[in-house]
Image (cartoon, rainbow, N blue to C red; front, side, top):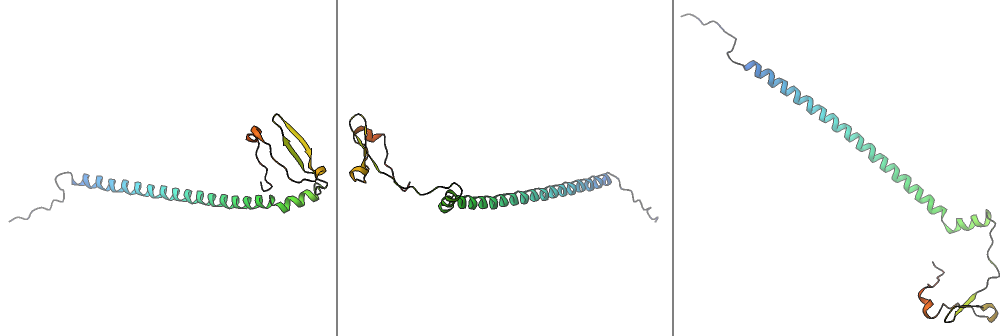
Length: 135
């Protein structure tokens, strides 16, 4: 018996399929890597936006605090007194308004000694509100 000659060549296209399979794996790996890099880029952008939002929130809180300090009644009073040379009102009078059916009459209550101001009567009461010192 004669020994067979070793033939390492295979019949068929197995080598082409291996090359195509390796090429597909390489393309898949490159696509997966590029998607991962793009994900890291988006994560970095998201962290940057979150930092901007946080710094803007801190700035807003600081501006809100400054605004509240500028609108405090004591600061306004001190500013009006020192910068604008304003003084407390003196010699004030209370005016009492009486209404008739068609118009208004002005009456000085300081002359009569009354301190109460009364609102309008009749239909004109619909168009006028009441004043409150707390408003």
